[in-house]
Image (cartoon, rainbow, N blue to C red; front, side, top):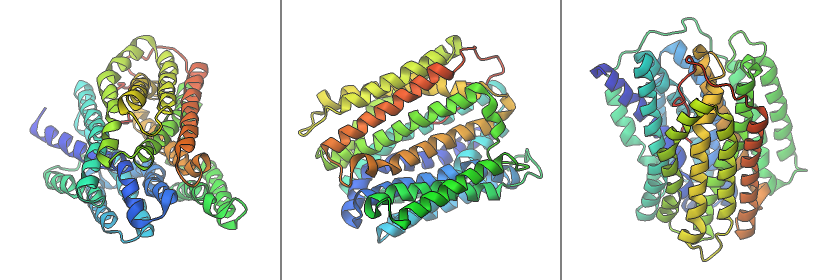
Length: 461
């Protein structure tokens, strides 16, 4: 690895690390945010979903921006904007302003992830590229461990506002390093940004999410709820219609004609909806009902991430040898069983007996699932389409989590209690089981070819 390549890899890791860290750090801060700013469960949902909404809706078009205007330029803009919006989040005097800042922060995150990966693919090739992407995946996975623990310590020792202010440090370091990185040649000269598709996607996702979160306050019979739902669904239908006809669509629907790609993304919906909803409520429940501090709540989820880091590569290798179908079936059932075990955690919560066994099972199930799922999705399409294929799968995962968290109020009610938590964990387990069943019925077991993308190319869970 040359000095230039090493610098590019560090820049790519730091750029995406800050986006993934922000996604994992926020859950443990939600109770403290609600205590200071009010808003209850709806505000907590919006703080998470505001970020996921703009990230999920724009991550695909951000890849086009990177191709059109250059990787380094887009990355620099994303970093600066992420820093500004992080400060805005930390200084927010009201819940409404915090949600607006989170929406804008998600826009910045959408610029960071595809541009950082594009830098790696431009600077590395062959085996070196696989190793570089593996390092990128591993370090962004570390954000899953560092986020909850760091967030808990900051919340308990100082304030939830530091959860956002801390972003400024890695952003400043990355911007300094980025000054010495030259923009690689643009791979898609003359590429056009699908502006209409992006707008339809934002409205198509935002309308239903708004309705699902606010229905608890206004009721389904209120025009404040049913009009955004109707407009959103119509916009999403228009988005699909446009993507089938656009000259340069942000989401090429033709990829879904490939069986494993389509089935793998359907399984992704169930698995990542369960994952996001499960860990969102897990962190809230331990603090608001179980009486855990933010630091202890952050520590409680770490065993799952450790299991993933220890075993994900092993199961990715096994899936490469035997095909992904079996692992994509077993893994979600193991994770679902773990979430069901967590329902035994009733006050006074005993972490070792009531929480740890279930969380370890969840982590093992995800380790069995994630790499084979990525291999099934990306290994089913031409290597030249791996970039857009990965972006689509990432977007599907984010949107699944977005919608699942928006449905929290419908599942648990206006206030989180033991009964609501147990009901939600049953739903989470059911979503996991659906992902496993879909995989068993739909995934073909043909082994990947030598040209298939490496299983390390994927998204941190």
